[in-house]
Image (cartoon, rainbow, N blue to C red; front, side, top):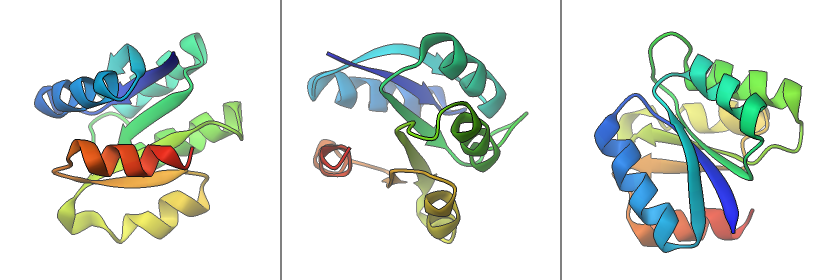
Length: 117
């Protein structure tokens, strides 16, 4: 079973994403509520997948993505963002993100994005 790390400052979003990921075959091994904790958890656990919110306190998701890519250029990081933030898509992809999910998301959207990873 593939292992996932969820990084999002919203507990509700983490819970929704955890439920969906479990349903489609991932084991959620950790969660973090800001980018800095996400980077630390990535280093500690080396998950197969990271879902990364963009707007968070302490360290934003774009910076956290860059830090994770310094650790492992092959990391599978999928960015998660609210509808109005789609201008970050190109930036995140240029830094190595493997995909992008727009909130609110449904199981079908998550499954489609992760199928390419």
